[in-house]
Image 1 (tube, rainbow, N blue to C red):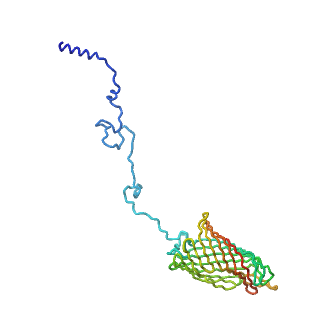
Image 2: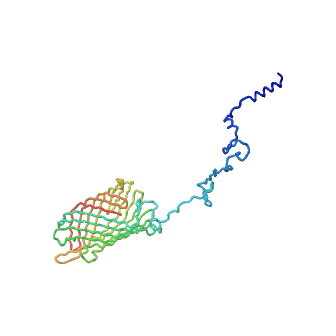
Image 3: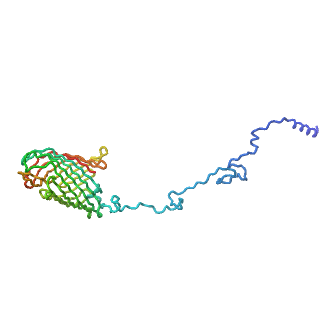
Amino acid sequence: MNSSVLLVLATSLTTAVPSFAANPFDEALNAPADFIIRGQDVTTSGPMYATGPLTVPPPGTTTFYPPETFGDPNAAVQGGMPQPYTSPGAPGYPTPITQDPWAGGMISPIAPSNGYGVFGPQPQQFGWNSRVDGTWLPSSGTSSPNVGDVEIWAIDIEEEYLTPGMPGDVWTFGPQFNYRSLQGPTADDPTRDLPGSFFRFGLDLALQRTGARGCTFEFGFTPAIATDLDTSLNSDSFQFDGRVVAYVPVSPQWQWVIGAAYWDRVDDIVIPYAGAVWTPNDLWEFRLLFPTTRASVFLGTPNGVPTWMYVEGEYHVESYQTELTIAGNTSDAKVQFSDYRLVGGFRWEAGWVTTFAEGGYAFNREVKYTSPGRDFDIDGQFIGRVGFRF
């Protein structure tokens, strides 16, 4: 069979092969895509070809991610915008306090350099400070001679105002009121008669001045009127007490107290106002002074209230003008009450108020008159006191 015949047969066989439907996977692989994933265009040229990181939106899109701007939080602010990596500049500090904030900003603060003395851990509290005390001495017998029983109720009120003066000075202005209610003596003895009530109106004036090395000096003067209000005022009605005291700190634990006081009573009494204050630690304090001495210990804060327990001894003297009627004649006289007191009690500081309650024994109780009155003694007896400071 010649070559021409073979060619004709091959042609006829080719045309005779049946046709099949196109494969869909082949069509998907060969057909051009009508969408492009940004940054993954396989072409090597054109507007969709990415040559680096995208910083602007591609053509025909609306997605935009602006680059974020970070400022240095520790940098100085210039033009209202924080400038990164710049010098923060000089640091700022609050203005130092050079005046007493409780004195209207007009007076220099009072603070001894050693930090102890009368200012101590409880410094002066400027402004008004109130004191209210109540005392009860139950009915007691008398002797030398026996003139019956005597019972005493007492109320003491003081409104004390403290204010700073020159640097290192503290002034005290303290109006005082005292009331005494007496029952007895019961015997009919006009030379030893006592009225039902006594009244005292006083004014305590004092200056505390801080000197060299933390020493503090106190000068006090207390004029008063003490009377039963039944007689006209005279020299027996007026009293002029005074005191001069120096507080000398020798260490954080020890302080010497050196001074004297004058009490204008039936007797003109000059007493030492002296002793020592010893604070061995944060719990104990010993005020070994005359005329009042005290030892106290801090018990903690039961129920959240700071509490102290103490024992105290005191020499106490007071006097008043009174009126005596003897054989139909009325005369003015001056009567003096004196005693020694030993008491124990508790003191509480509850916020703005400090209160105490104490009980003990009063002994060596004497009643002394100017003429025409006559003296007698009162037997030792229980004494109870409560008080408030605010």
